[in-house]
Length: 203
Image (cartoon, rainbow, N blue to C red; front, side):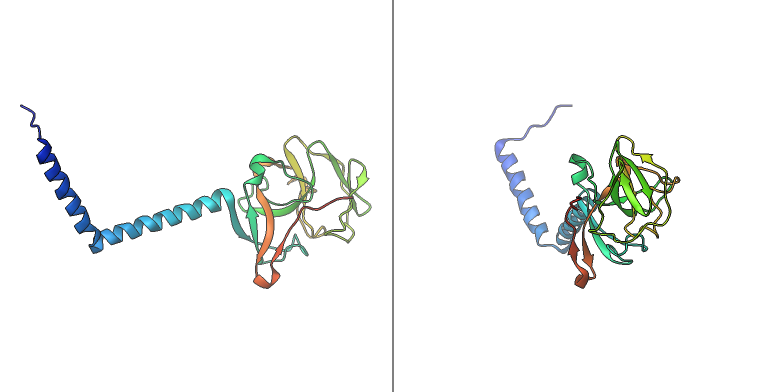
């Protein structure tokens, strides 16, 4: 079969008719609906990307971080920094325990290679008592055996030291970096409880 070819004038005519049809469609309800759906899809994808990879609000469930975080407060969790930097002592992190499907919020106390133990109501890191007066002033009930934190792991505890299941419990242990979701940067709701968290300085 012989292939048909178009002259330049025929091509221009077809192009002009296509542009006219496009302009006619732009004013139609169906075209506006398509534009709106595309806009909604872009907004949803952007929101999902931010929530999955950058930051998201998470509600506090329980009292293991009292008084720093209270049940039913909404905290803002930042997720990107741990892509480039290791967690630091004092960070409040969202993490997953072994076998858990729900995330937990705890504070990082021990870093890779350090040995952590509880003795006489105080946490010791590499044999030195840890000054936690910035967020904890009580006495911890019960001693623990020394635990050496593995490579790319952290030892986490709740600020409510006597009401928290954390790395002191053998069923939890140290938390691998891969199980860290991000770190808490602020309480954002209720609005009258808004507070940002700066990095703790230990003495």
